Amino acid sequence: MKARSRKWSFFAWSAVLGATALIPGVAFAQSSEDAIPIIFTGVFLLCGLAFFLAIYIYIALALQTIANKTHTENAWLAWIPIANIILMVMIAKKPIWWILLFFIPVANIVFLVLVWMAIAEARGKPNWWGILMIIPFANLVVPGYLAWAD
Figure (cartoon, rainbow, N blue to C red):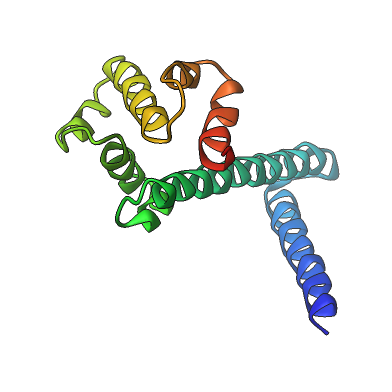
């Protein structure tokens, strides 16, 4: 029974997302020639949203796992957009005012690396793993490695 409800749920969400992509195309198109690019744009935006949502869930889950393994309080802060910075600073055992430094352009990159280096040390890994956070695509591997590697 649960498998049927999960399958129905998947199809229902797919139908809702498909309708969400099609309705603006039909509503804003002046002719049938204008509808196709608008529909493709809606589908592209929905796929991008799903991709970034999946990355956000992955990073939040990894950060929550790191917080649990380092015995940091309030691991659920990983799911709240600005509060996850507070959680990272708490895991790294840095002063709480470092949160303000994350909102300064260019300085935020430096302090992000410093915080991730301290998080790696808190997990018992070499601190150079934190430097990898500035490398595209490697920054997707580092949180997972720090969270789930023994």
